[in-house]
Image (cartoon, rainbow, N blue to C red; front, top):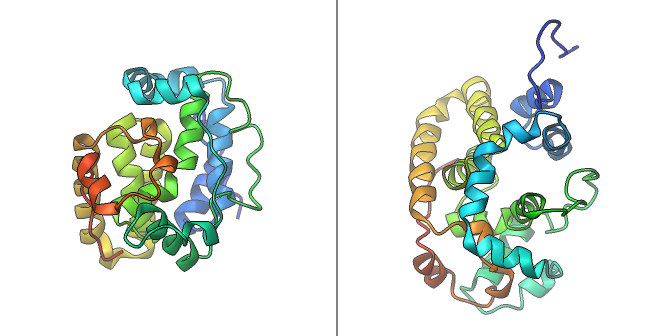
Length: 231
């Protein structure tokens, strides 16, 4: 099916990739195709206005940017060597359970995260680096609803166009492909937005240096409330 719609041009939106992820949220390459179109659009300065305002307020993010903090990704085996009940061990279990690694191997990320020219590029890189860490901190699985919970949490914190687009993707997917779970999704969306508004801004936290710390203590320290769903 041709997903190109004559007469419709939404700046920064890859309509074909968007519809692919509505149908199949697990199409990771389509997700990054959406990011690439947004990140390389001439409309990006306008589309990132609100996100830039939030990045400017994030003192932790500025401190990490000055340092260009980007430590080596640990392997799943290395994460499993972290103490029981730690962020790192929980992250390793999450990655192994879902057959993924932190490096997003096999995904074409060119023209998205290779610039790091300013704090806004760096902030988008942090979004990638902490994505699976947030799954663990929020107790969110990798179902469409779980992914939507992470996006909603981040939308409350950074009001980025991409996170709003992800919420729209998950809303349409649940509505058309998993309609019985609409109540679960609506509650998860509401809870995640509230949790994001309460929590410490997450992109400015050096999570990679806290992998040996107790997960529950980190949640308390950074005011992160898990969002429970049956997604």
